[in-house]
Length: 106
Image (cartoon, rainbow, N blue to C red; front, side, top):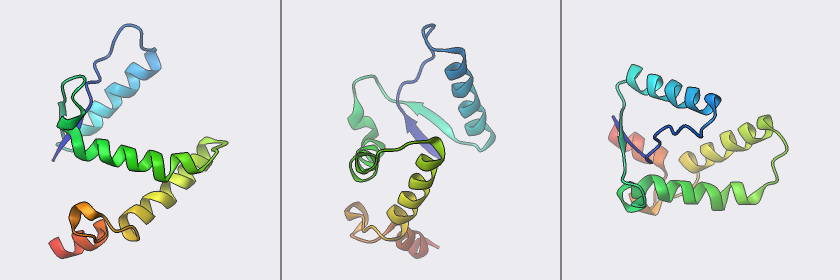
């Protein structure tokens, strides 16, 4: 598979922990055969599907809660992702849920 990712070059101002995190994500991707393709800085339209998903997450999930802990964020994220994939119609795929689209493809 291929994932478009924003240009995430590691700069000297980044903390060592963040640099390590980027390295771990790259190893994860390589291990699974995922090719990371960087978009040009300032060109979000090159990554329109992910940008739209991020906007949906922000407006339909993150803006709705005051999150007090990592565990609470993980709980909300799990619940929201299940709803997104199973209950929420997606107009980009004909008004059906991603789960329905996956069943049709199988």
